[in-house]
Image 1 (cartoon, helix red, strand yellow):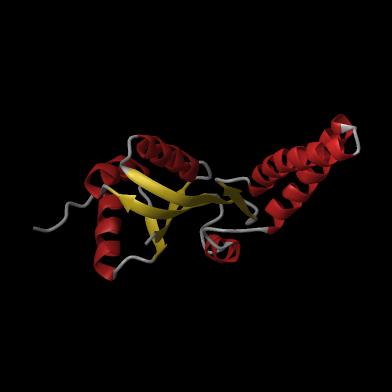
Image 2 (cartoon, rainbow, N blue to C red):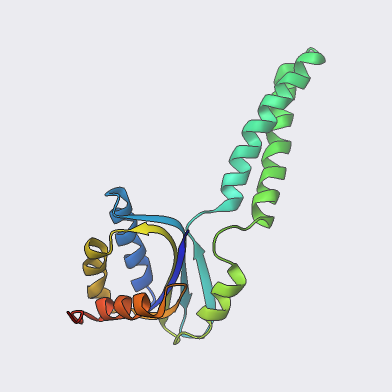
Length: 173
């Protein structure tokens, strides 16, 4: 089961730096991220989302490949596989991009926008869906960014320990 964690940071670029750190830690198998999203609230108060997975691009690529295969097969029936390949790839990429644009998985965008609108202008927030984490190795890496826990699906005790770790407070023995 995954845990949702939303952490706010001072500065518009800080959440991007934290996500880069988490992705580096993921390569070391210290954390397993199911999904992530950076929210930036600019000085004008506008909320901008930066999804970690571009579903439009993924859908277009997958649809283009499927369309090319099916187009080639259908083109073979009409003795013109090259036209079938080109037409199938074009139609497949278009429908795949549309399907990717309309689909959403992971963290709900409406939830991200509603929480993102509560952060200060000129700041950022990071939303992560974490499958597993080696907390004693990951949390010290996040401490220099001085984040504030906004929302989590963690228990109250786990959330308090996370906030203490982000602020550099040693847990009580």
